[in-house]
Picture 1 (cartoon, rainbow, N blue to C red):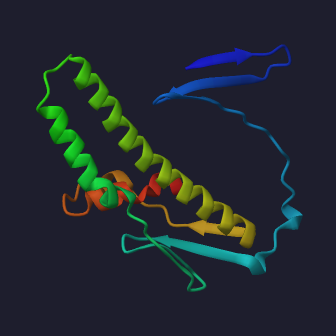
Picture 2 (cartoon, rainbow, N blue to C red; picture 1 turned 120 degrees about the vertical axis):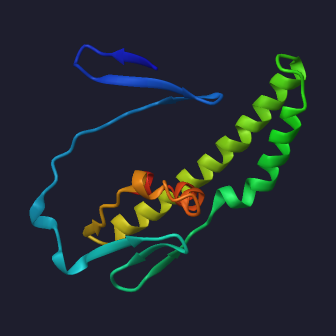
Length: 155
């Protein structure tokens, strides 16, 4: 990670993720508490079958991006395991596999951004349950589903 520091104290970190570079900007704003409308408050319950259920009854489906790409990922991983480590074809296959994982990650991130934007634009007060995700992932039957849901990124 690289950091550019400007004279006025602004720091802009630059990071590389996969084959892409990202500049991270953050802005501080004063929020006025008087503009909060308590009548438009909602609570969120996250789950495995339904991604989120709001306190007013609205439900959001869990897209399970990893499950949909699992067959392709297994095939790419199997192909990689049969290659000679360090060869040019091995390196190309590593890039293909990395792109598949990155695609799943990008799909999940896009879904979460759209969902969180929709919720914050619709409701003025949002309350979410505090889950111990690290402990829940220990359950070997549910760990893949919980990890695929990306609850930690949604909070």
